[in-house]
Length: 118
Image 1 (tube, rainbow, N blue to C red):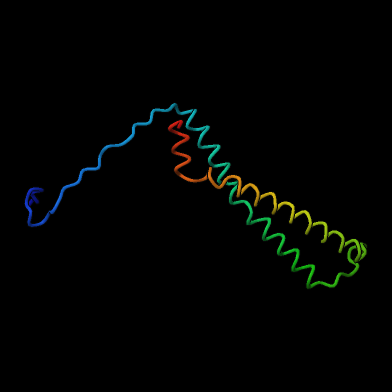
Image 2: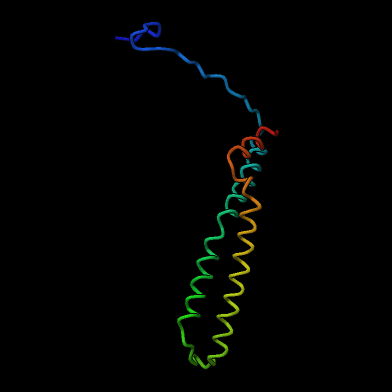
């Protein structure tokens, strides 16, 4: 048994929301826009790796007592870890900067406006 839309027993109101925008774009232009979007999306979430590396090196520095190993003195090992800590911190700052810079660009609204060329 089909339900009649005019039967007020079951339906109060029929709303039609079928109007939409028609976007016409070439495939290569859409591909370029999506590649830029994916790059920005990747850059905005890339801070987790340097943060994890920074924390791991920091914990290793705080909890280790360095000794001579593989004919390398403990002072050199300590310097290598400090240098690694510094490099991972700079990398983390750079990735956080990219995250903040691309905050707007990774939203779906921005992508749709870019595709619409608004």
